Length: 88
Image (cartoon, rainbow, N blue to C red; front, side, top):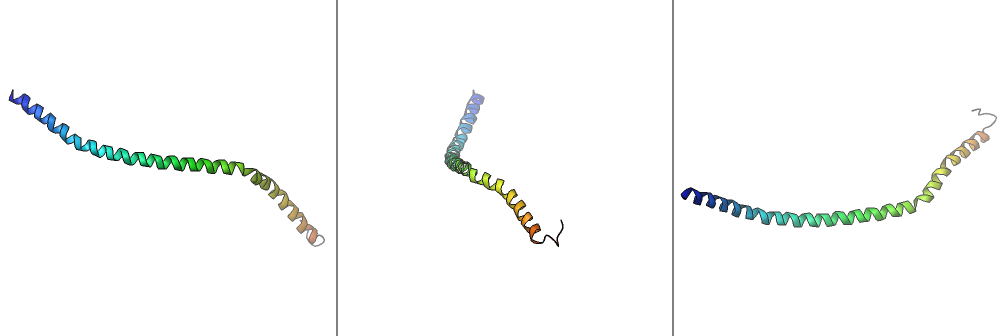
C-alpha cells in the first residue's frame, strides 16, 4: 500500500511539473500566432505586388521586343557612317 502511495505521489508531482510547461507552451503559441499573422500580411502584400507587376509587364514585353531591333538599327547606322573606310 505504501508503494502505491509513492507511485501516485510521483505521478502527481510529474503532472504538477508539466503544468508549468503548459503555461510556457501557451506563451509560445501566442507568439507563434502573432508570427503567423505577420507572415500572412507579408504574403498578402507580396501577392498584391505580383498582381501589380503582372499588370505592368505588358509595356516591359514591348520594350524587350524593341531593344534588339534598336540595336540592329544602331549597328546599321554605324556602318553607314564609315561606309567607304569600314568594311564589316
